[in-house]
Image (tube, rainbow, N blue to C red; front, side, top):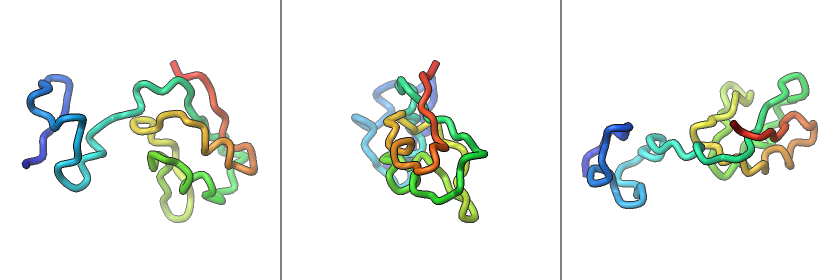
Amino acid sequence: MSKVNINESITWKEITPGGNICASGNSEEFKTGDWRVDKPVLIEEKCKHCLLCVPVCPDSSIPVKDGKRLEFDYDHCKGCGICAKVCPFDAIEMVKDK
């Protein structure tokens, strides 16, 4: 199956049922963070880049580059709050998403 460019004008007939993965790497095309109620906010001055939050994120929404965590990937974050609970420095605060 060929890779489909998913956008606002695409019909349901043009995508895979239930967003099934039909090619490697296509999960990035599905922005699944839109229905989040709470969202994590990084308090950078408290973050020690221990990276404990990274492996517990079920959506891999905490990118890391050169040993330092980057800002959340809000296109895929569901706001579950596991990252905030595991942070020993209280560097992640959960707030209501708009």
